[in-house]
Length: 399
Image (cartoon, rainbow, N blue to C red; front, top):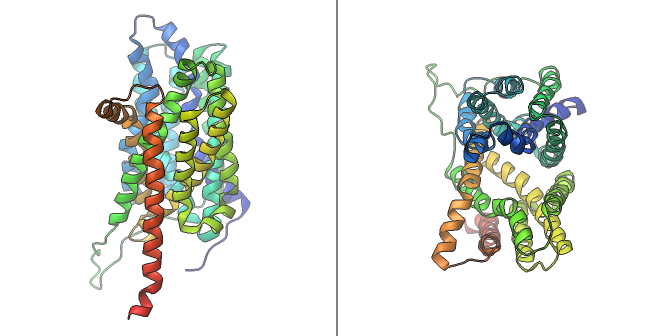
């Protein structure tokens, strides 16, 4: 099949879908002020405003994948934008916590649906080198959007916590761009038999589920960086909350730069890109374990960003390619996204269980576990990929 080239306008529209993935960041800085506005509410109840979208992502990522079997990816994105907007704006006007939680369920449904579609739209419209480049750009756009939206939310919340929900009006210009510039490629219909009946096709392969499981395991490990960095820096007197925030921003900056360069890097790393990314994250954890000062934490954050920015587009392209047919790539990405959400949600519980088994009590214990698992996993995966590639190249000689 020939590779169709789309212009810059279509590429920008496709990348703008990734912006919708990070709209949840706009209300995170307002949680403290929301808690003050509802003093009788338990802290865990207020935190539901932040955690519900992640839980909904696990469910609605799969729903989105199924919907692509009956409607186009563009229509699925349109539904997700409507849910994000409808679930986001009303909380600025209705000061009832239960209502806000209900709206987060609606928002979470749209958030969960758009997450896999941000990658699926790229694999649907682009191929080969162009797809690799844009998948890297998508990671970069996401990294930048996370910082910008969170900063915007913090700025608005400084005036009034309700104002942070006004940020969801940004969905409107994004939606206009997508509606007018993003092509609608239609539904990828199943094959028809000679008698006109629908052929029962295999949609996903064993590799799809293996990659989704690996992604869940990787997220269990790497998510411990985000959740623990502030506590570790405080416990070991390496910095305050502001400095911990800058460490996370440095990670984001590293991820952004590598995302922009991923198209070129993928030509060099080839099938080892995901293994290289996981190795970099593992090395970053080693540095985090021994980091004696704030500057060393920043170095580790940069390396972490390099690894994350490499692994993310590489594994997404691998998942898309694991589908039984290109028309089922969106479904494969949805399964992988579900694995990502499950891994992030289970991360603190799984790591706590492992710490208990080995009697680990250090503030950096989670990072010790992550370093061992990621470095070992990256080396093992590279060996398996090398063996599989060698076997494939030697196959004609054995016939």
